[in-house]
Length: 321
Image (cartoon, rainbow, N blue to C red; front, side, top):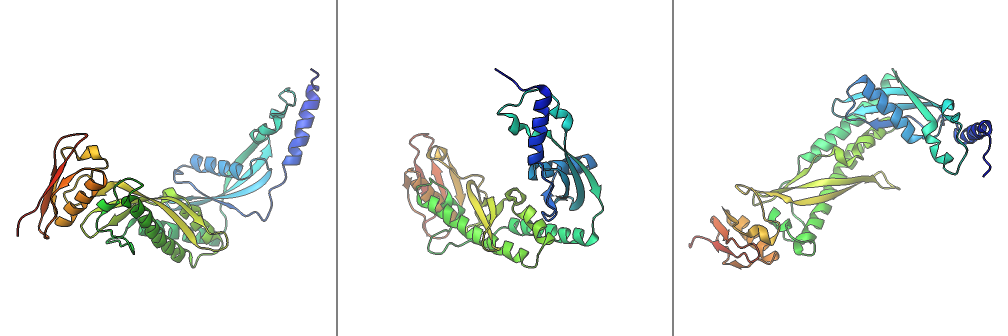
């Protein structure tokens, strides 16, 4: 099979790279990148170079990258010089169908820290602080949550199979929490524009920047929900949160754990307020575990289950008035 000469291969590759390597657009704006692990000069420089390469893999020119560390609240500006490493085009290898895939690997970047404009740093800092405050506000959680049209007296009511009432309650609760966070996010963003808004979104659109959301209920039980995704409506400025309720995180007063399957009721026992015992009884029945007795009155009751992995049975004991 005929192969082009080595010199021709190098020239052809440079020509194709020239077609790809257009200058960075002057109006493309600086990139704002969150770097929670940036604490040293080397880490900041490396992050700036990679942020530029990720944004424009095959372009050349000068790029601007702001790096935001939400943990230290530090903001840095870097000018990133982009060029093609022509030495790598002189490899002597023939042009192949795979050659275009290697274009990005021939581009290099060097970041240099810049002083920038004080007013730009102030705007970015304002947006970063607003996003951090939003995450802290979300992490405060909610107490005594109610879901319109559905009975939700305890976090225990959210434990159970997806195709049961508890599965529907988890969906409903995640929607209630999403509405709550949507409102918090929109309020936090209300007075942000330009760089401050972009800095806010750089952090707020990262679901991992939000801590688990604690949700409390009237019987002193609680659980956590996780922010899985954050988006912006295409035609509006509204924020959209998507959450996942974690039933395995259910806890309560003197309640170290809640069974998640029929087998986990084997040998299980708990004594507590009547509302919690009633919720445990509902859970057992949802999972197909027989329960003898009912919760009566408001005094403390207990539930105890025999040790039988496949055929557990539970019994409720409440004081007689």
